[in-house]
Length: 440
Image (cartoon, rainbow, N blue to C red; front, side, top):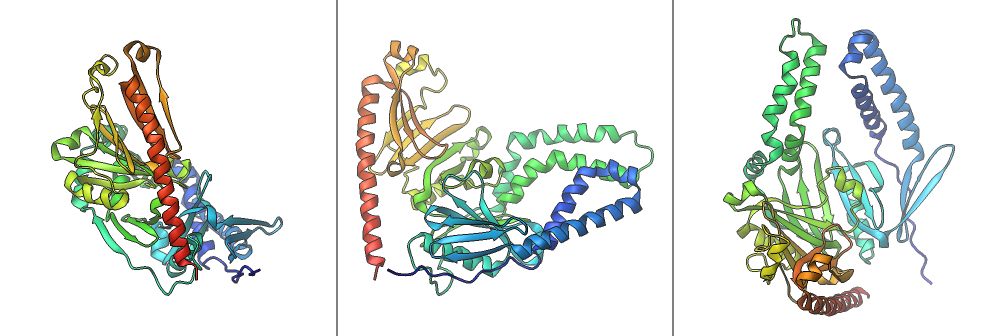
């Protein structure tokens, strides 16, 4: 019986205590705010901040000294703690994605944070902050190769091919055509009005005004900064998504982890023919989605001709002429404004559903990822002879064919269940063949 290889134990980057101390200091300053500065005075405020930085750095140094990680066979083990030791073992079979995240301060110091997304986790599992950028990149490739069943020995970074690059000017213009940006002038007026009668301007007043202005513009500004330099590459591990201006993020998304793709046409973008595409990726918990980390963003903005080849390369989806069958005319009694757009259809590998009125939506899901197929019928639908067909996946995006003829709904559900089984069988067969070819 082969013995699982055990690699040496490694520590985080030596700058980790200082970076964590500065992070804690920023939080404390935010809590004290400018009013705290005014009450304490410059000297006591500076001494208090220095004391917080020293204490936080000492605690972070102890944490750094007692924290280590190592690859033990097909597990990543992370140990930490001084008085109470704790060791977490992360089976690499449960590993979904590995992201390299570089906040602004980390970029200035040449380090990065490695975030591991595993099955069933609410948030990133045991993020390794911080590692040097070369170490983080090598460790990511090493973990992904082990999770994919390979021996983990890589001669260098895998060759990447560019799939699409989003123009920064289009990102800026698209954000200007969103409701968040429309309310910025009104928010600025509300933020500036209390300071109109300010007699003497000092550091506290200027800081408070800048804080109020930043609170108004942070949402649209953050979206622009996060989507800046957005581009997609691909290699043998899957998709590589890169984006960010101040803080950068490098995501690796294996194609089998994609549960569904949602394409939306916002109302103000439709005259320009623009759309946005998001994907449900298995492994990204609710925390990552709610924290605005753009874990699911595939295309921040694109036109139809550009998005079609991208979705074709990612999922094999047909965006120009999807195989959709419209809903019957009597669906107008339940959806008077949307019934003309309601449609559902499928091919050999994918299922499609169209919906929306002000904001049009198209959801595309691989049938191999389907968890269940069900028919739902409400009381009014029973009177009209209509029913909904649901194709459930492991993510938040679900394909729903609304208000279909009841006989068509049951026939479609049976067909989708059969096609989904065939798609899973083909996928499993391809996986076994590739695994057999990779085994010496």
